[in-house]
Image (cartoon, rainbow, N blue to C red; front, top):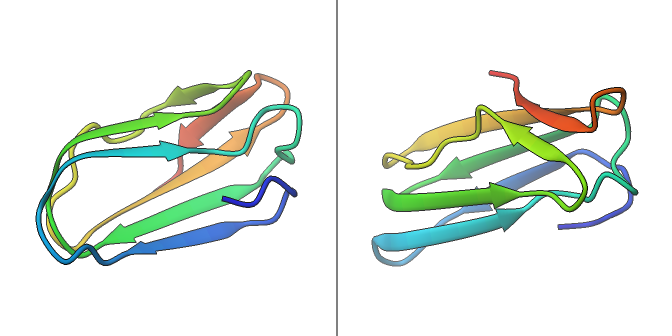
Length: 85
């Protein structure tokens, strides 16, 4: 994912079911207040890990269903990403 402060939409279309998925959000040092990351996925994922260097990730999903969606928004004051959908 780009580390330049722009919003991002990840469209994940795996060819088969995924056991695990790791997503690294922009680091606190480059994330911009109000920055949004959205993700859509077409197939189920049993275990999801979402991280960000130097920032806390709150409310991120730990599993995803087929045709699922989530949105996270960065808050610079708290150095945190929050669920925003």
